[in-house]
Length: 238
Image (cartoon, rainbow, N blue to C red; front, top):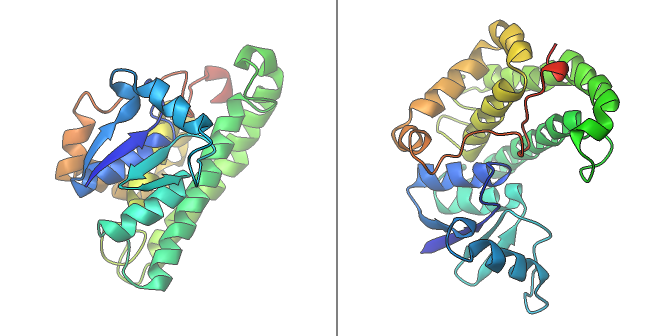
């Protein structure tokens, strides 16, 4: 099967979590918005009344006749299909739970630069962003990263992975979140690095996996930029 991934063409965003899973799986897929008229096709699908289970927003994945929306939901589907999640129900639910927790962290990271409304520019909410960013760096960021450090430490199979003894999509997603946080908050992440050795080591292992390393070195991997979820503003990283 050749998958069709629908997401915006110029940013990593939430679509990157799906791309990493597809790349690690060696799956055949097309990034629809990056081909001719692809973004128009994506917008048309979003507004179509003919779609039985319409997605709310990108990313969404076309798999045969299925159209699957929401990042965590897509990964739940791909995890079972491509051996990126445990086979047992308890393990699959635990992996999904970790992914949803990462999704919460992504939202909080985004809201540091857009605390009032996504429809406003950062410059229109700079004062509020300064307050939100300070709390995120001081309290929320260490709480989230510390949680994943404890999850790794508590894994009875060792701290090489979040779930069990093999890589899951949760490991890939933690790598992506940490990479984004290092871009957006380099000073804060540098301060916390020594306290979260297991998280740091897991991210290094993910980056060195053959297919992931090839993807990261390719043109398919877009750089972080000031239009995505993770944005660097020096005033928010003090």
